[in-house]
Length: 222
Image (cartoon, rainbow, N blue to C red):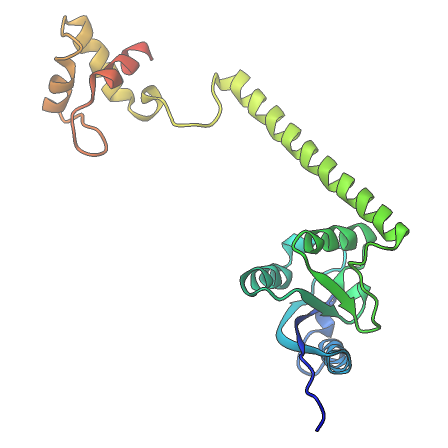
């Protein structure tokens, strides 16, 4: 009696770059699916799920693709460690984009295999390792550039307005309350008296309670 093989669970990933190639009557998705299924059967894999990015450019960042994002969620939830694609261009046509995507999967302990048997996540090839290092450096540079850009924008806003982000001051959110509190103080009311006077005139916190003394102090400093 033949011994039954233990099949390795895997997911299939497909991508079609042009909207004109998307649809039940088109060949691209069908061709990719058949190639992936044929390879899986011959190589001892059991396809447990499919993910597809229709009308998505091969140069689009991996993380922006709905189908690929769903794939990442799936493999993180159930422990599947293998992704099968028709060829490297289906994963990503742009080399840097491809290697950045592969880096993301390597970091999750994943293996990406093409239907020709090429293991895209293989790190034994020095040229692939070099490309991933370049891609990783590029990603790190882009992240640092974005952080610096956001900081510069915050600094400009702070110079113009005196603040950037965070909770609005009482002067911004409750100008009438602040003005009344200052008037009450000028009239000789103490810090402890002002909350009651404000409440009597309908000036309460968002929870419907009188302001604390510390809040009155902040208002008077505004």
